[in-house]
Structure formats: structure tokens, C-alpha cells
Image (cartoon, rainbow, N blue to C red):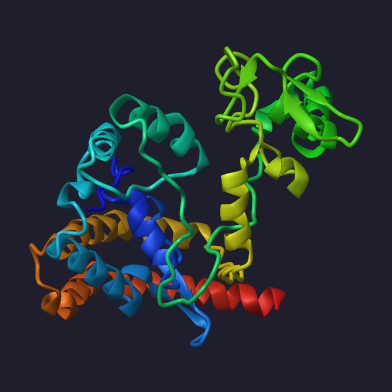
Length: 324
């Protein structure tokens, strides 16, 4: 069966998110998104009271009831999920390019050296064949106190170089030319013989991240497509090729809340999210029948779901009227 990881602290965090976005929602699980945009109606709905989310739960419950999804998926640790895969007790698990190289293949090398594992494209849900991955990248926030430093200008110059220049982005990913990588006349980069990362140079005795601190999640962001893909293995490039042929899903419009609105919705958010999380687990595991869906939605309404969504839609309309 399918026995998944990434369930701490959010039960089935990755699996729920994957199923939600492929069914046209903004997210779920570890990517909890209170509202989702409905382009046909031109307004937001509470994500976890939509028919799409009901489909997600119906699908999960079907997998569990038919023995295709391990019910411990919702509560187990990553290590427990990995052990089940390595021992042959399960055959499907969530992954990314690094998990395959750093976790699963080393696990199999100890238990079943002949085993093969591959990354497959994301499933296609009711939203059709889409690529749910965002092409947006995070930005930077700088404390207002930084202005008081005599090094403020130098700091801003360094930030501009490291995150936004071609040279800085290359440095953050690949490190120092001649030390951690080499570059040929065509511009193609290769790790030096004694350096490895994501399995690109398995015989390397030093690790680009652990030993040198490069290619990390703090500094290595964005850049040109060539640079972004420069660490992709052949199998990852095949995965990316399939996904990039799918149309990118539409981003929801902005709905900036006023300070008073943020304060108001924050009073409702925790109770709503807790109720969603508790009942998601109950519906998926069959502890609560899906015939009680309408009752569940009414319970959300009692926790100010409609008022929450109303504030969001008013904020959206306000933004639209001002910015078009």
C-alpha cells in the first residue's frame, strides 16, 4: 500500500496538499489555506467546505477502506514511513529529488539492493492536467533597525549582489570555482571530484551543503532557469519536462486585509483550523461518515466561517476597485 511521510506536525501534510491543489484548491495539510478562489463565480470560498475538498476526503477514505493507504500515514514519523518502504511493507511514498537520493536509495541499499524507485508526475485531479507548482519566489524582509547601522549601505549592496546578481546566485548555489566546482568553455558547471550533493558525484568525500554550506535553503533562491536546473539529475529533468508541459494553475487575486480585519479573522482562524484538521482525519479514516458532510459544514458556520469569507471577499472587491 501507500504509506506516507511528512505527517508531523500536520497529519498527511504533503498528501493532503497534493490532492487539494490537483482538485483546484489553494492548498491543505501543511499548506493550510483558509480560502480558495473560484474563477467562475469571481469570489473566494472557505477551502474546507467546498465540494472539491469533499472529493479529496472521499478519495482518501476510499484508499483507506480498500487497504491502499496505510491509516498510520496520518500519524507516523518520517522514519517509520521510510522503514516500511525499505522493508517492502509499502510501495509508494511522497518524495522530492533529494529524498530519493539521500533517503530511499541508501535505505534500499541496506535491505534490498536490487530494488528500484522512481519519481512519478503528480496525479491529475478534478482540476485537470495542471502544474500546481508556483513560479513565484519568496522575498526578503529587513528590520527597520538596519537603517541605524553604519553598515546599512554596505549590507544592502551585499544583499543585492548575493540574492539578485548572476554572480551572487551562482556563488550561493555552486560555491567557489576551482574549489567546489569547475566550469568549461561552454559554461557548464561540474562539481570537483571530491565534492558531492544530491547524488551527482557519489564518490565525493565532501558534501557541498554539509561541509561547505552552499546550495542551502537560506541563500540559494531563484535565478535563471539554467542555474535553477543546473543541479537536476537526468531523472529529475524528465520529471520537470512532464510537469512543465502542463499549464500552470491560475493564481488567486490579492485580498489585502486592513489591520482591523486581520485582528478579527485571527480570532476565528484557530478554531476553524482545529475543526478542519480533526474532521479531516475522522472523515479519511472512516471515524465519521461522509454522509455527515452537511453537518460538518454547519459546524464550520457556527465557528464564523461565513463571516471570515465575507471579510476576505470584501477585501478583494476593495482591492479590485482600487487597482482594477
